[in-house]
Amino acid sequence: MDINISDTVVKVNKNQFRLISEIIKLSENQSWELAREEWNWIYLEESDDASTCLCGHKPIYNICTIKNKYNNNTTEVGNCCVKKFLKESTPDKIFKSVAKVRKDNLKSLTMEFIDYCRDNNIINDWELNFYTSIYSNKNLSEKQSKIKIAINLKCISNLNKRGV
Image 1: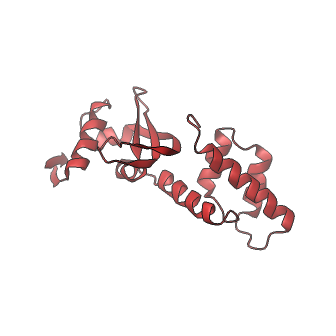
Image 2: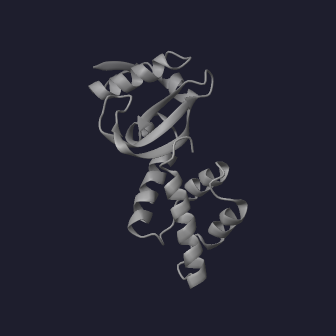
Image 3: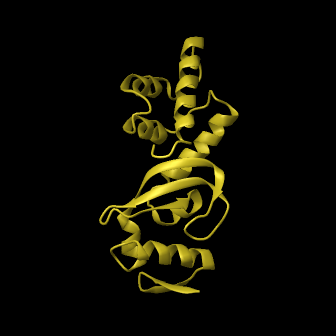
């Protein structure tokens, strides 16, 4: 399938074509280049239940809810598709850091995720400041390690709750 992007005809697969078409339908602008600029992610979810991405891919478990800044439309896409049109790769980085921390709960979450958790009242200012102060420190005291692990678990557990 072909799609016109920036006055250039580009070959895309069926899922890419479906994603672009669906995003354009939900957007104010009818060109892909302009429509993709209208969207921001508002929250992330790791789901136990399989879902389907806007592109048609299934199953997806890492779900990004995005919102159009002009018409307030919202929709869900997988963490792979969100990279196709958001300039930032923050959602994908967050899911990768969560996977890393699940394997070793003393590893660090990304600061983008920590900021996201503060912005959404999952952690408080003290926890944000603590995490920022020890972020790149490899030699934590036992007390610091326990606090970091508690903050990590608090952030990750809230990733599974709708509306975070």
